Image (tube, rainbow, N blue to C red; front, side):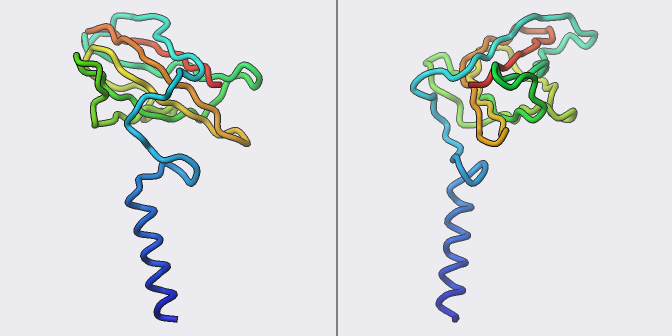
Amino acid sequence: MKKYILLLVAIIIAQVSVGYADEREPIRIEKTKRDFGKIAVVRTDLNPEKLTKLFFESCSHPSIGILKNCTGYLYEITKEGWLGKDRISFKQEKKWNSINLAAGTYYMKMSSYQGRTYYATGEISIVPFVTNFVHVALE
């Protein structure tokens, strides 16, 4: 019994250390071989604070329609083309749907679970000192 408990604890610790976002996909700081779906900054608007902001305006799937639970991360792309190791959480939830960040180019990985997981990945360019509105179309 003692060996069984130790084995179970070791398995739990190993799963936590891998960095799984959920039970299906590990979080990896790398670009996908091809872009999935479509991610685009569709418009910009002045904001009173003159801060660089990103606002999650909509998330959809062509066969499903508008979705309400898209989540994911942004990774800053360096001048050399590498992905930064620090990720920025970005979600449709009210607390996370508007974030302040530095202007530049970012790689986004977004997903939503609707009976199965749908994804969108791609690069976006953030314009400085305005609010950038992003639309995500999952595949």
